[in-house]
Image (cartoon, rainbow, N blue to C red; front, top):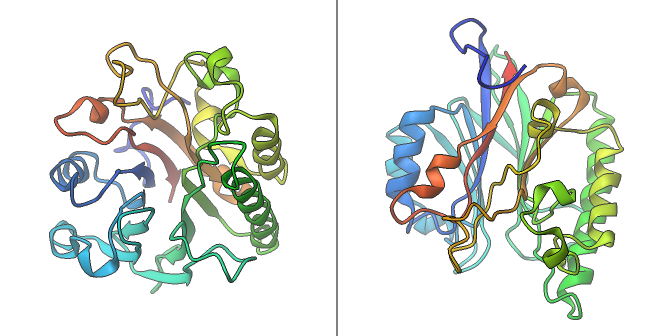
Length: 274
C-alpha cells in the first residue's frame, strides 16, 4: 500500500519520522511549521548541532512533545521527540566507550498502559575522504550498529532505527551513480555493511512500499542540486520484523526541502498500525 492510498482516518497508527535538520536553532521555524502540519507521533532528529542546554525545548514542548537530547557543540547531535513518554535506554552506540561523538540515542516510547515502541535516532559518520581515518571510523561504526541490532532482535519487539545513515543503498538512490561511485556513501565496503544490517531481518520502510528509484532525501545546497532534483536517498527508517508487520505507509516530505532557509535534508516517515 502506498502513502497516496492510505487514510489515517481509517486506521489508528503511530507516525514515526526521521529528519536531519542541519542545526535545530537555525531551522527552528521550519521544524515547528512541519510539526504542526505533519503531526508525527515520534520524531528522530539528527545534526542538531546544539548541546542539551541550547536545545529549543520550550518551543517544541508547547506543541505537545516530550524530548530526549544528546548534544554536541557545533557538530553532530541527535534527539527524539514524542507525544508519549520517553524512557531513554542508550545515549551512545554500544561497543566503543571511547567514542564521544553525539551520534546515537535510543529510547522506548509509550508506556502506562499503552503500546510501546523502541526507537533510535542515529547519525552515521560520513566517512569522507576515504583515504583518511574517517572512513575506517564509518565502517567500524556500522559494524557496531550491526552488532547492536543483532542484540535488539533477540528481544523480538517492534523497533525503528531511523536517521541519516550517510549511505546510498543502490545506484537507483543517487542522481549520478558514476560520479558518486568512489564516495564513502557509495563505496562497496559501506554498502556491504548496510546490507549486513538489513540481512539480519530489518526492512527499509520507504523502499518496502515505494519501488521506483529517483526518490531522494538530500539535495546539496551547491550547484543548483535542489532545483535540478539531483539528490541522494541517505535517510532511512529500518524496521524490525515486528514493526514491519505493522507498516501501512511510508513517504518523504520532499516539499519541506524547498522552503525558506530549509535544511538540505527532507523528513522521511512511516506509519505503523497502532
